[in-house]
Image (cartoon, rainbow, N blue to C red; front, top):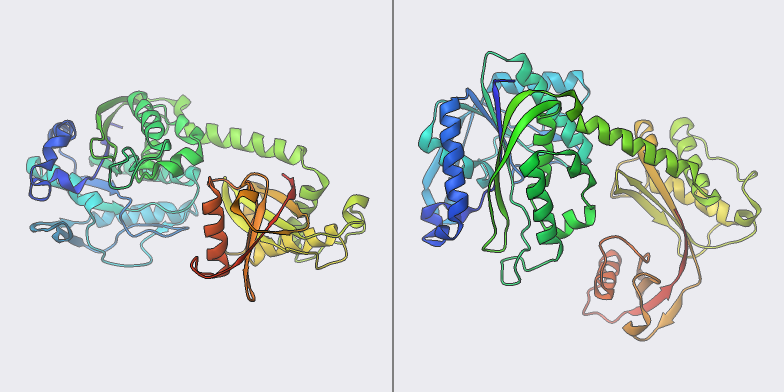
Length: 461
């Protein structure tokens, strides 16, 4: 693919002299690298520059492509209104991308909010490029809340369109900063995940081994407070099955936010760099192992929801194991898809004749009635992972010292309002966080008086 170049760039507003007012000198390496890639792009002379920005208008389950013939923007919100942009869109490419998405039944298109202004995630790269080269059209993309593999496959979709337009030259820019939590005196504070995330990403950018993006600990990604990971994942998919020369041109984070610039030059094809398919095979093997090792509680939850979604039937409890039929308890059924919560509904106390019936009732509710999510579809069933928490009796407590986020779940109450949070949940590190989330779920203001209860669970996963 001699008609494609790709770059990963940051978008700190203070890099613009009229905004930084001297502070930009603190990220000189980033400025120098930006100028270098702008000169490269000018020599390459692309017909179209495709930019994906984390600050574009996004949807949870849809990749929006900006439509219309053109769009404008300025740095007014950063007190530099005199710097303006007016770009023409490559409407032919947009239509080709939408057609390709339709053929692959991929959730991308121009529906939704229209004619949004240029955001700084796209304007900052354009600021440097425009100094060297202006004879190009633009395609504006956003990512979504869908899984990482979906973002990778979006990149593959874009590659297909570029291949079919081999008479034109394209530059793809993945805009995004790395961790925003590198320094305690930075704008977002410090988190130990910040430097870990940036170090791993920089290693990946140096050698171009995008398979490692899939193996990054989600807790490190979330804790780092980044905004470039999903842009980079789309770029990785764009370079699927391509041999590349990867260069990390610069990295620095003097203000508490990580800024990395990397370039990717296509050398040849390489079928071994099919990282999306490799990850999918690993994921499928892991899912098969999970299914093989399910205990009766989890197996019942899965079979219940699969039967209900496929046939609309509620299963009978007749063949459930005795330990599920002869006891009563509150039960929570949690469902995850690609590591993200897909539904969680439960009962604090028993509402049916047995744990088996409680699981059946709550598995259906988790998959179809959780107000945070749409109902599970048949196509999703193979990707779902279940866990079942059987609650032990709750007890009132009078001191936070009696809590342990790993061992105890909590219930907060005030009048008729209550909020429950299970123990040992990902991302919750302190008792304070645990209580804060439970209060928010209950609609109780932290300044209001409330009672606290704790409980243990028997977790099946």
